[in-house]
Length: 96
Image (cartoon, rainbow, N blue to C red):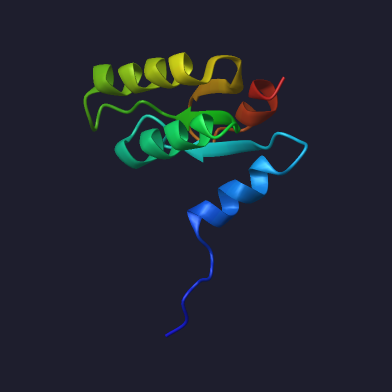
């Protein structure tokens, strides 16, 4: 079995030594895993586009609260996008 030789500490150290800020797209950013990943990336200086369709499969108010918390943590580094990734033109309009 092959094991990846990639660790979070190594990757975060590499970005901290970089002179530019990277932007990351996280789909499902209002869900459990996406929210925690987004919060981690924002805390380490990444710019983030958080995409979520805010479906009613889970509690909508909880998902909206997650986006609000990410906006508070990320400030100008966080761009929330409400929609589905397959929507034509969504990311083109959102990137401006």
